[in-house]
Length: 552
Image (cartoon, rainbow, N blue to C red; front, side, top):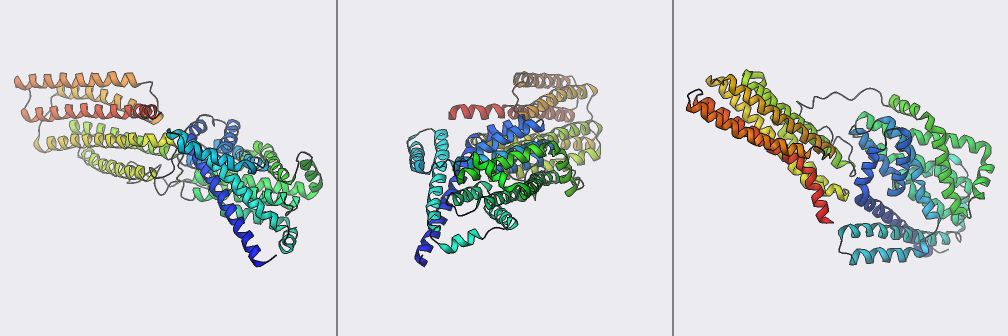
């Protein structure tokens, strides 16, 4: 074959690979955008035990067509404290089986209808007026491009059979270790075992690779697929690193088991898989699935030991940081694993932490108003600086993730999250205002009567209740207390009017000094506005749902 023909074939192969990678990426990202939030909710709800986690992990990966994406999401869940290592192990085991669905689809050779699938997707995207339908059409377009790429690569590989140099080189690949290493390196670079196994499938269909070597390359692909999760865990906490290592050790130990079996029973294994495969392409797909199912069946009872092995590899605990005093983010930011599908969940946890800080600071300030404790007053100012830092950092992060490939449902909630951050920051400002009043009292000697102190305490109890209910509703998207929050907010408004009237009566009777009256009136008004901000936080979950209904 001439140099020109070789170059043409290589360019065609590269173009086909490019189409395949782009189609896979477009399809996976589009599925995550359309259904990512719902899939995440399923992942959160049904992973209470390892077996259920395994089932969910299988279906999750089968849907989004990427075990790397599923495992990376699990790593971020563990990092955020939403899932423990034993639950993560089940999901990771299931995702390893789910990833074989891609090679099964590829083996059915839908390349001939790829142009029709692609055209259908493009037409739907062009002529549909609904945004959700357009996004769903992108899944179809990705699917069509994927198989178009496969068809292009398959055509290029057919030409390889006429090149003795390439045929002889591939026939010389008889070293199992070298084949495994090749599959591992290729997958680590491409960051998708589905892509590598699909290429192996095409080469097997063209008789360019022997079946035993195909199996060893598949084993290497499985180990190489761990690279994405391992890289994602580098910036995470120790448990995030351990979750990635569970994926790694599952594949390494599983590969060693298959190596031992193949060393003694290679021919029977190949004969068994060939009996259920109509061609070499189906053989590769079936071998991939059978290997994964076998590994899960054998290793699932020992998943606890694999978790312990990962813990031994990453010993110790994370350095304790006092997040109440330090200007640091806990769940988001550069030092935390980023995953688009869990980014909003982690922002909500960070906002929940910020809200708890603001609520505690309000109570600290109200206590300082009565006790005039100088240390409490100073601590209110320090914590307020931390709250201001969190508000700025969370807002910057929301701007950043707004530009990433978030699920559609999460994108719709971003506006509400900006408002929640602002409302929490305003609660912090009111705590600082109370500290200013305490400082003024301390310096001027203004006294507040026992009756006024009792009235402020009663109103503070009501405000604390509405803040805590609002935070719980926001953090867990729970509407069950919405009516209670609305009624309580009305009671706070009524309490504010009542206390202001009683304050005016005391002033008119000379039972209160004008200086004390000003402080009392300002504090009561401030507490009423805190209740308003808390109600806004509670209504944030309703606002997001209303926006979704309007969009539909």
